[in-house]
Image (cartoon, rainbow, N blue to C red; front, side, top):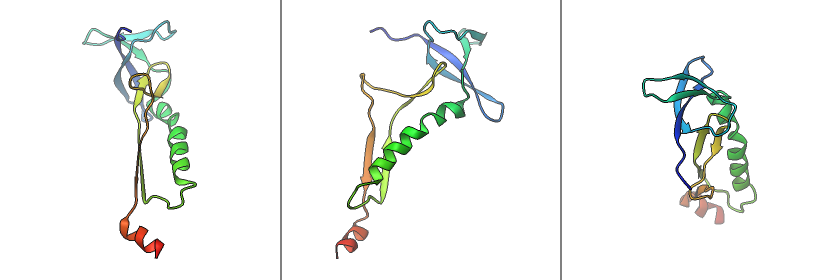
Length: 120
């Protein structure tokens, strides 16, 4: 598998400003470049705003957290979930993979003094 060529996508922000993001070159896409920049790369207009792209990830994060919180006999005091996001001019934000697999890193923490007090 050869590395994908990189392109620049412009994501609009809710306040009307925009941000340029390096993305994989859209393949066979209906997205057309909207301009060129001083770097010599084409700029593609993202199909959604940055906020809309991130909104698509919220249900995944909520589901993971809700499943980790529910059903535990001793709920954790802290839950940390880490995963990678990749921006795409066509799809917005997607959960990225490393080596063909999507990985969620989960850390659960219990405060020892509170845990000890619950068992007494």
